[in-house]
Image 1 (cartoon, rainbow, N blue to C red):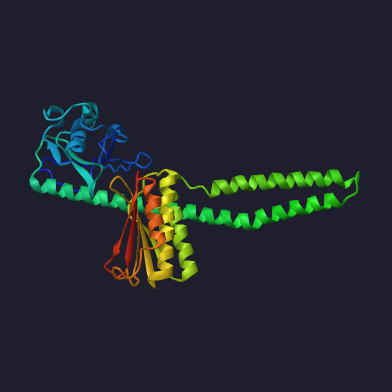
Image 2 (cartoon, helix red, strand yellow):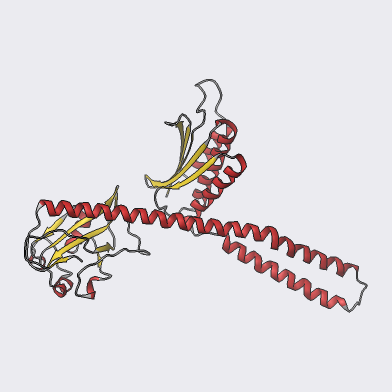
Length: 350
Protein backbone atom coordinates (compact mmCIF):
# COMPACT_ATOMS: atom_id res chain seq x y z
CA UNK A 1 0.00 0.00 0.00
CA UNK A 2 1.24 3.48 -0.80
CA UNK A 3 1.13 5.66 2.31
CA UNK A 4 2.33 9.25 2.07
CA UNK A 5 4.11 10.43 5.19
CA UNK A 6 3.66 14.19 5.20
CA UNK A 7 0.49 16.07 6.18
CA UNK A 8 0.51 18.15 3.05
CA UNK A 9 -2.12 17.81 0.33
CA UNK A 10 -2.21 14.15 -0.80
CA UNK A 11 -0.10 13.48 -3.88
CA UNK A 12 0.09 10.35 -6.00
CA UNK A 13 3.70 9.20 -6.10
CA UNK A 14 3.48 5.54 -7.02
CA UNK A 15 1.42 2.38 -6.91
CA UNK A 16 -0.54 1.38 -3.85
CA UNK A 17 -1.53 -2.22 -3.36
CA UNK A 18 -3.49 -4.49 -5.62
CA UNK A 19 -6.13 -6.75 -4.11
CA UNK A 20 -8.03 -9.50 -5.82
CA UNK A 21 -11.78 -9.91 -5.34
CA UNK A 22 -13.59 -13.06 -4.40
CA UNK A 23 -16.23 -12.55 -7.07
CA UNK A 24 -17.55 -9.75 -9.19
CA UNK A 25 -20.23 -10.56 -11.71
CA UNK A 26 -18.99 -12.14 -14.93
CA UNK A 27 -15.45 -10.81 -14.64
CA UNK A 28 -12.65 -12.95 -13.29
CA UNK A 29 -9.30 -12.62 -11.57
CA UNK A 30 -6.90 -15.53 -11.71
CA UNK A 31 -6.36 -17.11 -8.31
CA UNK A 32 -3.31 -19.00 -9.51
CA UNK A 33 -1.37 -15.79 -10.09
CA UNK A 34 -2.70 -12.87 -8.01
CA UNK A 35 -0.36 -9.91 -8.48
CA UNK A 36 0.12 -7.71 -5.44
CA UNK A 37 2.40 -4.72 -5.18
CA UNK A 38 2.75 -2.94 -1.85
CA UNK A 39 4.82 -0.06 -0.56
CA UNK A 40 5.36 1.60 2.83
CA UNK A 41 3.21 -0.87 4.75
CA UNK A 42 3.59 -1.46 8.49
CA UNK A 43 1.32 -4.44 9.05
CA UNK A 44 1.54 -7.85 7.31
CA UNK A 45 -2.28 -8.01 7.43
CA UNK A 46 -2.47 -6.17 4.08
CA UNK A 47 -0.57 -8.92 2.23
CA UNK A 48 -2.90 -11.57 0.86
CA UNK A 49 -6.03 -9.62 1.73
CA UNK A 50 -9.10 -10.78 -0.25
CA UNK A 51 -11.80 -8.20 -0.94
CA UNK A 52 -15.35 -9.46 -1.65
CA UNK A 53 -17.53 -7.33 -3.90
CA UNK A 54 -19.44 -4.67 -1.96
CA UNK A 55 -17.27 -4.76 1.16
CA UNK A 56 -15.09 -1.85 2.16
CA UNK A 57 -13.88 0.78 -0.26
CA UNK A 58 -12.35 -1.68 -2.74
CA UNK A 59 -15.44 -3.88 -2.74
CA UNK A 60 -17.54 -0.84 -3.58
CA UNK A 61 -15.20 -0.06 -6.49
CA UNK A 62 -15.64 -3.62 -7.75
CA UNK A 63 -19.40 -3.09 -7.85
CA UNK A 64 -19.45 0.44 -9.29
CA UNK A 65 -16.34 0.18 -11.50
CA UNK A 66 -15.32 3.76 -10.82
CA UNK A 67 -12.79 5.56 -8.61
CA UNK A 68 -13.87 6.16 -5.01
CA UNK A 69 -12.18 7.71 -2.01
CA UNK A 70 -12.92 8.43 1.63
CA UNK A 71 -11.52 11.20 3.78
CA UNK A 72 -11.33 9.05 6.93
CA UNK A 73 -11.75 5.32 6.34
CA UNK A 74 -12.86 4.17 9.78
CA UNK A 75 -15.49 6.92 10.05
CA UNK A 76 -16.79 6.92 6.45
CA UNK A 77 -20.55 6.40 6.22
CA UNK A 78 -20.51 5.35 2.53
CA UNK A 79 -18.71 2.02 2.94
CA UNK A 80 -18.87 -1.10 5.09
CA UNK A 81 -16.25 -1.56 7.78
CA UNK A 82 -15.31 -5.23 7.53
CA UNK A 83 -11.64 -4.28 7.21
CA UNK A 84 -11.36 -1.70 10.00
CA UNK A 85 -8.88 -3.86 11.99
CA UNK A 86 -6.52 -3.98 8.99
CA UNK A 87 -6.91 -0.26 8.34
CA UNK A 88 -6.34 0.60 11.99
CA UNK A 89 -3.24 -1.62 12.11
CA UNK A 90 -1.86 0.42 9.22
CA UNK A 91 -2.89 3.70 10.89
CA UNK A 92 -4.67 4.71 7.66
CA UNK A 93 -6.83 7.81 7.40
CA UNK A 94 -7.69 8.79 3.82
CA UNK A 95 -7.88 6.10 1.14
CA UNK A 96 -8.49 6.08 -2.62
CA UNK A 97 -9.25 3.06 -4.80
CA UNK A 98 -9.57 2.77 -8.59
CA UNK A 99 -10.58 -0.17 -10.78
CA UNK A 100 -7.91 -1.88 -12.88
CA UNK A 101 -9.75 -2.22 -16.19
CA UNK A 102 -8.50 -3.43 -19.56
CA UNK A 103 -11.12 -3.40 -22.30
CA UNK A 104 -14.20 -4.78 -20.57
CA UNK A 105 -12.21 -6.87 -18.07
CA UNK A 106 -11.98 -5.87 -14.43
CA UNK A 107 -8.69 -7.27 -13.14
CA UNK A 108 -8.59 -5.90 -9.61
CA UNK A 109 -8.35 -2.71 -7.55
CA UNK A 110 -5.46 -0.30 -7.06
CA UNK A 111 -5.28 1.48 -3.71
CA UNK A 112 -3.48 4.43 -2.19
CA UNK A 113 -3.74 5.92 1.28
CA UNK A 114 -2.52 8.53 3.77
CA UNK A 115 -1.91 8.14 7.47
CA UNK A 116 -4.20 11.08 8.18
CA UNK A 117 -7.63 12.36 7.13
CA UNK A 118 -7.57 14.21 3.81
CA UNK A 119 -9.37 14.71 0.50
CA UNK A 120 -8.25 13.69 -3.01
CA UNK A 121 -8.72 16.27 -5.76
CA UNK A 122 -9.53 15.58 -9.42
CA UNK A 123 -5.90 15.61 -10.47
CA UNK A 124 -4.91 13.00 -7.88
CA UNK A 125 -7.87 10.85 -8.91
CA UNK A 126 -6.96 11.11 -12.61
CA UNK A 127 -3.36 10.17 -11.90
CA UNK A 128 -4.49 7.14 -9.96
CA UNK A 129 -6.85 6.14 -12.78
CA UNK A 130 -3.95 6.34 -15.22
CA UNK A 131 -1.81 4.22 -12.91
CA UNK A 132 -4.61 1.66 -12.64
CA UNK A 133 -4.97 1.51 -16.43
CA UNK A 134 -1.21 1.03 -16.86
CA UNK A 135 -1.15 -1.68 -14.20
CA UNK A 136 -4.06 -3.48 -15.90
CA UNK A 137 -2.34 -3.28 -19.31
CA UNK A 138 0.89 -4.63 -17.82
CA UNK A 139 -1.02 -7.49 -16.18
CA UNK A 140 -2.67 -8.40 -19.48
CA UNK A 141 0.66 -8.33 -21.35
CA UNK A 142 2.21 -10.54 -18.67
CA UNK A 143 -0.79 -12.87 -18.88
CA UNK A 144 -0.49 -13.20 -22.65
CA UNK A 145 3.27 -13.71 -22.46
CA UNK A 146 2.84 -16.41 -19.84
CA UNK A 147 0.18 -18.14 -21.94
CA UNK A 148 2.34 -18.02 -25.09
CA UNK A 149 5.30 -19.45 -23.18
CA UNK A 150 3.14 -22.23 -21.78
CA UNK A 151 1.85 -23.06 -25.25
CA UNK A 152 5.42 -23.19 -26.59
CA UNK A 153 6.51 -25.52 -23.77
CA UNK A 154 3.67 -27.96 -24.37
CA UNK A 155 4.16 -27.84 -28.13
CA UNK A 156 7.80 -28.83 -27.60
CA UNK A 157 6.69 -31.65 -25.31
CA UNK A 158 4.35 -32.86 -28.04
CA UNK A 159 7.17 -32.76 -30.58
CA UNK A 160 9.43 -34.77 -28.26
CA UNK A 161 6.62 -37.28 -27.73
CA UNK A 162 6.23 -37.78 -31.48
CA UNK A 163 9.99 -38.19 -31.94
CA UNK A 164 10.13 -40.79 -29.15
CA UNK A 165 7.17 -42.63 -30.65
CA UNK A 166 8.83 -42.78 -34.06
CA UNK A 167 12.27 -43.83 -32.76
CA UNK A 168 12.24 -45.56 -29.37
CA UNK A 169 8.72 -46.93 -29.88
CA UNK A 170 9.70 -48.38 -33.26
CA UNK A 171 12.88 -49.92 -31.81
CA UNK A 172 10.98 -51.60 -28.97
CA UNK A 173 8.49 -53.02 -31.45
CA UNK A 174 11.33 -54.38 -33.60
CA UNK A 175 13.03 -55.93 -30.56
CA UNK A 176 9.80 -57.61 -29.46
CA UNK A 177 9.13 -58.93 -32.95
CA UNK A 178 12.67 -60.27 -33.21
CA UNK A 179 12.40 -62.10 -29.91
CA UNK A 180 9.09 -63.65 -30.93
CA UNK A 181 10.69 -64.79 -34.20
CA UNK A 182 13.57 -66.45 -32.36
CA UNK A 183 11.14 -68.21 -30.00
CA UNK A 184 9.24 -69.60 -32.99
CA UNK A 185 12.46 -70.98 -34.52
CA UNK A 186 13.72 -72.74 -31.37
CA UNK A 187 12.95 -76.42 -30.96
CA UNK A 188 10.59 -77.36 -28.12
CA UNK A 189 12.28 -77.62 -24.74
CA UNK A 190 15.28 -75.51 -25.69
CA UNK A 191 16.89 -73.89 -22.63
CA UNK A 192 16.80 -70.44 -24.29
CA UNK A 193 13.00 -70.41 -24.25
CA UNK A 194 12.77 -69.12 -20.69
CA UNK A 195 15.43 -66.41 -21.13
CA UNK A 196 13.91 -65.18 -24.39
CA UNK A 197 10.42 -65.15 -22.87
CA UNK A 198 11.73 -62.95 -20.04
CA UNK A 199 13.29 -60.57 -22.56
CA UNK A 200 10.02 -60.44 -24.50
CA UNK A 201 8.14 -59.59 -21.31
CA UNK A 202 10.63 -56.84 -20.43
CA UNK A 203 10.35 -55.36 -23.93
CA UNK A 204 6.55 -55.36 -23.65
CA UNK A 205 6.72 -53.65 -20.24
CA UNK A 206 9.15 -51.04 -21.61
CA UNK A 207 6.78 -50.36 -24.53
CA UNK A 208 3.84 -49.95 -22.13
CA UNK A 209 5.83 -47.54 -19.94
CA UNK A 210 6.82 -45.56 -23.03
CA UNK A 211 3.18 -45.31 -24.14
CA UNK A 212 2.21 -43.94 -20.73
CA UNK A 213 4.99 -41.35 -20.85
CA UNK A 214 4.10 -40.35 -24.41
CA UNK A 215 0.46 -39.88 -23.41
CA UNK A 216 1.49 -37.58 -20.55
CA UNK A 217 3.84 -35.59 -22.81
CA UNK A 218 1.25 -35.31 -25.57
CA UNK A 219 -1.69 -34.19 -23.38
CA UNK A 220 -1.47 -30.45 -22.61
CA UNK A 221 -3.83 -28.98 -19.97
CA UNK A 222 -7.20 -27.72 -21.18
CA UNK A 223 -6.23 -24.05 -20.79
CA UNK A 224 -3.50 -24.34 -23.46
CA UNK A 225 -4.64 -27.35 -25.51
CA UNK A 226 -6.22 -25.20 -28.24
CA UNK A 227 -3.16 -22.96 -28.53
CA UNK A 228 -0.82 -25.97 -28.70
CA UNK A 229 -2.89 -27.56 -31.48
CA UNK A 230 -3.10 -24.34 -33.51
CA UNK A 231 0.60 -23.66 -33.12
CA UNK A 232 1.38 -27.15 -34.39
CA UNK A 233 -0.96 -26.68 -37.36
CA UNK A 234 0.72 -23.36 -38.25
CA UNK A 235 4.16 -24.93 -38.09
CA UNK A 236 3.12 -27.90 -40.24
CA UNK A 237 1.47 -25.57 -42.77
CA UNK A 238 4.59 -23.39 -43.03
CA UNK A 239 6.93 -26.37 -43.39
CA UNK A 240 4.68 -27.92 -46.04
CA UNK A 241 4.01 -24.83 -48.16
CA UNK A 242 6.78 -22.33 -47.41
CA UNK A 243 4.10 -19.72 -46.63
CA UNK A 244 4.80 -17.80 -43.42
CA UNK A 245 2.19 -18.69 -40.78
CA UNK A 246 2.00 -16.99 -37.37
CA UNK A 247 -0.17 -17.72 -34.36
CA UNK A 248 -1.20 -14.78 -32.17
CA UNK A 249 -2.96 -15.44 -28.87
CA UNK A 250 -4.78 -12.17 -28.21
CA UNK A 251 -6.29 -13.04 -24.83
CA UNK A 252 -5.96 -15.83 -22.32
CA UNK A 253 -8.34 -18.59 -23.32
CA UNK A 254 -10.91 -20.28 -21.08
CA UNK A 255 -10.93 -24.09 -21.00
CA UNK A 256 -13.09 -25.55 -23.76
CA UNK A 257 -14.87 -28.90 -24.03
CA UNK A 258 -12.87 -31.21 -26.28
CA UNK A 259 -15.59 -31.20 -28.96
CA UNK A 260 -15.55 -27.38 -29.12
CA UNK A 261 -11.75 -27.21 -29.30
CA UNK A 262 -11.69 -29.91 -31.97
CA UNK A 263 -14.27 -28.01 -34.04
CA UNK A 264 -12.02 -24.93 -33.97
CA UNK A 265 -8.83 -26.81 -34.83
CA UNK A 266 -10.51 -28.76 -37.63
CA UNK A 267 -11.87 -25.49 -39.05
CA UNK A 268 -8.42 -23.88 -38.86
CA UNK A 269 -6.88 -26.86 -40.69
CA UNK A 270 -9.51 -26.64 -43.44
CA UNK A 271 -9.02 -22.87 -43.76
CA UNK A 272 -5.23 -23.31 -44.02
CA UNK A 273 -5.75 -26.00 -46.66
CA UNK A 274 -7.89 -23.55 -48.66
CA UNK A 275 -5.13 -20.96 -48.41
CA UNK A 276 -2.65 -23.53 -49.69
CA UNK A 277 -4.83 -24.53 -52.63
CA UNK A 278 -6.38 -21.25 -53.74
CA UNK A 279 -5.02 -18.08 -52.11
CA UNK A 280 -1.52 -17.69 -53.60
CA UNK A 281 -0.71 -15.93 -50.31
CA UNK A 282 2.66 -14.91 -48.92
CA UNK A 283 1.62 -15.07 -45.28
CA UNK A 284 -1.16 -16.18 -42.94
CA UNK A 285 -1.99 -14.96 -39.45
CA UNK A 286 -4.01 -17.20 -37.14
CA UNK A 287 -5.44 -15.29 -34.16
CA UNK A 288 -7.27 -16.80 -31.21
CA UNK A 289 -9.11 -14.86 -28.52
CA UNK A 290 -12.01 -14.94 -26.09
CA UNK A 291 -15.01 -12.92 -27.28
CA UNK A 292 -18.81 -12.85 -26.97
CA UNK A 293 -18.92 -15.53 -24.26
CA UNK A 294 -16.92 -17.87 -26.45
CA UNK A 295 -13.63 -18.36 -28.27
CA UNK A 296 -12.85 -17.17 -31.79
CA UNK A 297 -10.17 -18.44 -34.15
CA UNK A 298 -9.45 -16.13 -37.08
CA UNK A 299 -7.43 -17.14 -40.14
CA UNK A 300 -6.41 -14.18 -42.34
CA UNK A 301 -4.27 -14.41 -45.51
CA UNK A 302 -2.89 -11.79 -47.89
CA UNK A 303 -3.73 -13.72 -51.05
CA UNK A 304 -5.89 -13.01 -54.08
CA UNK A 305 -9.14 -12.84 -52.14
CA UNK A 306 -12.58 -14.22 -52.85
CA UNK A 307 -13.68 -14.83 -56.43
CA UNK A 308 -16.36 -12.51 -57.88
CA UNK A 309 -19.94 -13.40 -56.95
CA UNK A 310 -21.38 -16.08 -59.20
CA UNK A 311 -17.97 -17.01 -60.62
CA UNK A 312 -17.59 -20.20 -58.54
CA UNK A 313 -19.79 -22.25 -56.27
CA UNK A 314 -19.03 -22.46 -52.56
CA UNK A 315 -16.75 -25.44 -51.96
CA UNK A 316 -17.56 -28.40 -49.79
CA UNK A 317 -14.84 -27.33 -47.33
CA UNK A 318 -16.69 -24.19 -46.28
CA UNK A 319 -19.95 -26.11 -45.88
CA UNK A 320 -18.16 -28.75 -43.80
CA UNK A 321 -16.62 -26.09 -41.57
CA UNK A 322 -20.00 -24.46 -40.98
CA UNK A 323 -21.64 -27.79 -40.21
CA UNK A 324 -18.84 -28.82 -37.84
CA UNK A 325 -19.13 -25.59 -35.86
CA UNK A 326 -22.94 -25.66 -35.84
CA UNK A 327 -22.88 -29.05 -34.11
CA UNK A 328 -21.36 -27.40 -31.01
CA UNK A 329 -23.40 -24.20 -31.24
CA UNK A 330 -20.74 -22.25 -33.14
CA UNK A 331 -20.72 -20.28 -36.36
CA UNK A 332 -18.50 -19.42 -39.32
CA UNK A 333 -18.01 -16.21 -41.27
CA UNK A 334 -15.80 -15.36 -44.24
CA UNK A 335 -14.97 -12.11 -45.97
CA UNK A 336 -12.36 -9.98 -47.69
CA UNK A 337 -9.81 -8.29 -45.44
CA UNK A 338 -7.84 -5.06 -45.76
CA UNK A 339 -4.86 -6.92 -47.27
CA UNK A 340 -7.04 -8.07 -50.18
CA UNK A 341 -7.08 -11.64 -48.96
CA UNK A 342 -9.67 -13.69 -47.08
CA UNK A 343 -10.46 -13.78 -43.38
CA UNK A 344 -12.22 -16.80 -41.92
CA UNK A 345 -13.66 -16.52 -38.42
CA UNK A 346 -14.78 -19.52 -36.40
CA UNK A 347 -16.56 -19.01 -33.06
CA UNK A 348 -17.73 -21.50 -30.46
CA UNK A 349 -19.44 -20.80 -27.12
CA UNK A 350 -17.70 -21.51 -23.83
